[in-house]
Length: 438
Image 1 (cartoon, rainbow, N blue to C red):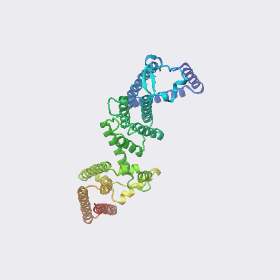
Image 2 (image 1 turned 45 degrees about the horizontal axis):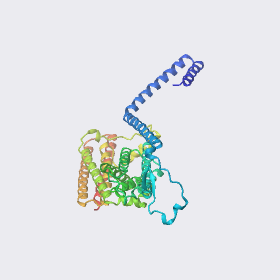
Image 3 (image 1 turned 45 degrees about the vertical axis):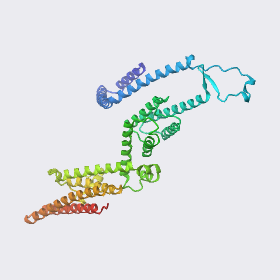
Image 4 (image 1 turned 90 degrees about the vertical axis):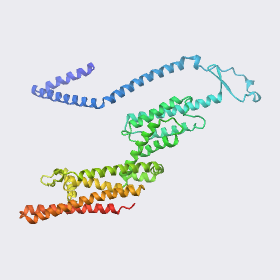
């Protein structure tokens, strides 16, 4: 802390004693002490949470420092190592030396004391420039990815442009040849790009079109041209597929969705979604999710926990304004007969599963597999429906045999109403399942 900051703090403390009683100052001290304790706990918590990130950043800064030292050394060599880098002195100009009949078909220049074909120098310089620009575009993109959750569109577009410029040399140069002059630089940069994309996949806010473009760049445009790491390619492909699948499934039943409109209008996205790889992957995803829901449904239906069956009551007394949404939601459940935790969980599993079976049909899943899932789901719901009817029948008999008071009678009618609604809900779900056609 600087002397100026210390003086400012002393002045604030002195001012505090001038304007307040000792007890007020003591209270202020207690408040500051409590704030310090809270901040200390928060600091320790964040340190524990992000300790590995801090170590990673520290290591990155150290690497950056070492890299700057190397660059400084190389730059000094470039400036002062005349034996290696100084251009040879041009010959004195002679007016008669440029007659047409004396011009050599191959121009020759002197570099570092050696004669080199000028065309070769131009070609190598141009390639070096393209590789350098591509490397810079990759570095800018990765820096943007590491520094923010959003990446500028211009940075991403520049990355794709430089990739295209690089692969334009594929007919003249084999980038996968270890003898290629810049092979190590290219492969290091590709690994750098892949690892950062994978590491930050859940943080960066790339659009689905941009993820698909990256997928196409790696798997179509450059896969056989550049020395990508195949293991990292597989990981990136998994990430891209998962992101697009989640969006496709989330907007499937939503009208006038912005993403849905983009999916239907963009040729790149449509080609990706209609590809065999995507179709196989989304079918596997839906099948896994459907099987998971069926297993969960079996587990819930086999659970004899009393708490799962206990009815809840909707209390309107002292209802706060913020609870209005909860009241509406509970009223909806009440009208469907979903008056306990078990029934609500059954409903929450069955509804999305019916949608997923419809999606399996839309994506041309094997009809035998779809039929098997439909049958299993219908059997589970039929059993649940029979249980509900049986329970309702027992309650009705008990009502006839007892002379209940008015409250008990009303409670019996309400219970019967709820069970009838729940039975009707299950029957309607069974009908929807049976109506699905493969």
